[in-house]
Length: 251
Image (cartoon, rainbow, N blue to C red; front, side):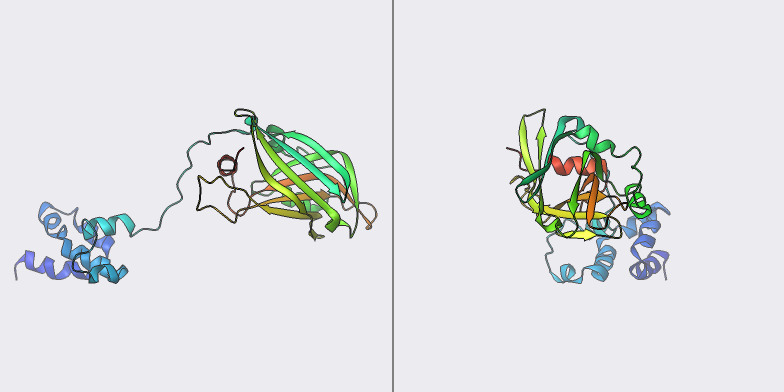
């Protein structure tokens, strides 16, 4: 049997990565391995429904296999179009009709977080704050307290403004702190983000905000020393957070 005939018998039995390696052996092997029949055999192992069609909607089976045989790798994001220096956050917290906290927090402050958590912070909360997950935190001054068990009467609103365009977007709208994680000394609230109509396929993304309280003092009172905000459902880096904020419905 001629060597070319042997190759034509063996090539359909190979895996795609091995067939691709054969293309680099010599010109003869390359010319034979480029035959689209062999790549149709590879595609039939992965996507048999495409190969069943007499006139498949593809340019070639080789190109189909080359384009889609590997899992999509995580791509590096382009630099965000905004920075934390462009942003300021308007945070208001109520206990029923009593305003507990109302501040304009510069983006640079929210980004830099806690330099040193105050005394009385639990080890578990310190571990959380020092963890690798990207989060935005800032200290509350002056501190305020919430009676234990009254967290469901406490609500929060967060707006964000862009100094470069003088536009505002909503992040959280009067959401209640429905859940208390006693083990890590946090009270949590969330809201689904209002994404720009320019991104119609983005939905169900939550913004989370947490009240951070100390473990010192009476169990009947939550002593709030800080606030944390994150978008951990989808954004786990500074760049991802900025891209997400850029996609909000700015008005």
